[in-house]
Structures are given as structure tokens and as C-alpha cells.
Image (cartoon, rainbow, N blue to C red; front, top):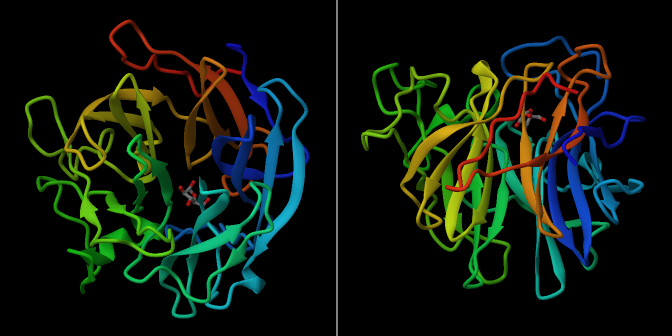
Amino acid sequence: MKKIRYLYPTDYMADPSAHVFENKIYIYPSHDRESGIAENDNGDHFDMQDYHVFSLEDVQAEVVDHGKVLAVKDIPWSGRQLWDSDVTEKDGRYYMYFSMKDKNDIFRIGVAVADRPYGPFIPQSNPIKGSYSIDPCAFKDQDGSYYLYFGGIWGGQLQFYRNNKIVVPNELPQDNDAALSPKVVKLAADMLEFSEQPRDLVILDKNGQSLKQGDSEKRFFEASWMHKYKDKYYFSYSTGDSHLICYALGDNPYGPFTYQGVILSPVVGWTTHHSILEFRGKWYLFYHDSVPSGGKTWLRSMKVIELEYDENGFIKTIDGMSS
Ligand code: FUB
């Protein structure tokens, strides 16, 4: 399938995290809505209130909506804004990691647990201790260890932190300084806590130097995703204000990673966010754009397209404007 498919045209769903569970594709998106809140750089207009889960028997099959599986009002520590989430499975239980602002308007990462991939997901009473910022991606390595990747600048609040501590003033590094890194942390055996302090996931250029904050077409902004292909670790992410999905390669889950190129050129809409999945021997990119809403950046729709590697394992760039 080289053709792009809109997955769920009857409602607005974004940030699709796709996984194979029980031999089906499950998608865990953010649920966009028209909140009437004016657009700003903090992303207040992304005022999502619940999550739905979707499944497909195959990439071309009917998309099944399993309904609402978690809502802001059911989360004991909730403030507002359910942003990107991801789900992983361990020992027959499903763990949803989600970004939400707490009662002090600080983004934290929460966990909710289910016995089935389609929920409902029951939230823990508190966010993960030591968690901050947004966009968790849960990754299971071949040795059975689980890692969480997270972070996002601007509205995602990553620039508030250095060495996992909140700092004042709220500043990004200077353009010539090393870029702010996404974070990686190993999860504890119970999947409900971090087993260590989150570490910087450093992205280097081809000369072995850290990408610079001013290199806005390459540096990390948000939307972490990790997958493995032929024993290499592929860390992919959005560059935010330059609207690209890029990737970097590493030899282990912590990195360092070396920047390689663009997976997806800009789509219609400000944000771009994706996941990458292998299903029955083919690879797919799940992502979103704002075409069906006529360009409203806070009303996004999920899509899927086949993703291809060249003979050296480099990902072929997909045109975000093609349909
Ligand atoms: O959906 C809300 C936010 O928009 C996500 O957390 C970001 O990655 C961006 O897609």
C-alpha cells in the first residue's frame, strides 16, 4: 500500500500511536475537539478531554472505535489537556502513558492500566514520580526492558527543566548551544514508576557534535518515537516549528543517536506527529494532518501510509502534502 488512507474521517483524532496486540493493529490517538480557545504558543487550543482506542484487522480493514477509554474527569490529579499517549503490554496487562497538566498547570506523565488493549484504562492516583513535559513513547527492547521517551518544547514545557529539575527562568538554550534533548528512562518492573533518573537522549550531527538549538530543521521539538529495524535503534521526532518528522540512529536505547534525515515533509496544519509499525512484514507510518478540517491545526485526522527503507536501512522521505 503506497496510497495514503485517512483512518477515521468522522471525528478528529491526532498523534496516533500504533502497536500490534493480539495480532491486530491498535491505535491510541489524542482526541481533538473544538474548544473555542484561541490559538497560542502554549497550545491552549489543544484542550482534549478524553481518549478513544481504535483497532484494525489489517491496514485496509474497517477501523473499529472501541469508544472512550479514559477521560480527564476520571483522573484524580487532573488539571486539563490530555495530550499524546502511548500503550505497551507486559504480562497480559496494558499500560497507557499519557501527558496531562496537573492542578498547577504543569505537564506530567500519568499511567493508566487495563486488562485488554481496548481498555478501559484505570488511572493511577498520581502522575509518575519525577515525570514532566509531554509525549511519552513506550518501547520494549528485545531483552524485555521497557523504556519511556518523552519531552516537548514550547507548550510541552521541556524548557522549564535542566537535569530533571525545574529551573527559572523558562528559557531555551541559545541558538549556538547544544539543543535541548528529549529524555529516555528505563521503567521499573511494575511499569508504574521510573527505575532511574531520566537521561538526555543526545542527537549528534554527522561530525559527532550535538545538534544546535538554532538548527530548527533538525533539532528535537516533540513527538518521540522509538523503533528497531535490523538491530539498529531508530529515534524519530517532530521538529515543531519547521514541521518535519526526522530520525536519528543509535546502537542502544539510550544513544547517542546520529541525525539521518527527514521521514515526513510538512503536512497541512502546524503540528506533525507519527508512529512507526511493522505489520505482517511491511512497515507503516501513522500520522495526522488537518486537511479534513480545512486546515484547523487543532482539528486533526489520522492517516497511514507504507514506509520504506533503502538497502542500507535509511528511510525514504514521504511527501506530507501527497494524498
Ligand atoms: O496533541 C497535542 C500535542 O500536539 C501533542 O502532544 C504534540 O506532539 C502535538 O502533536
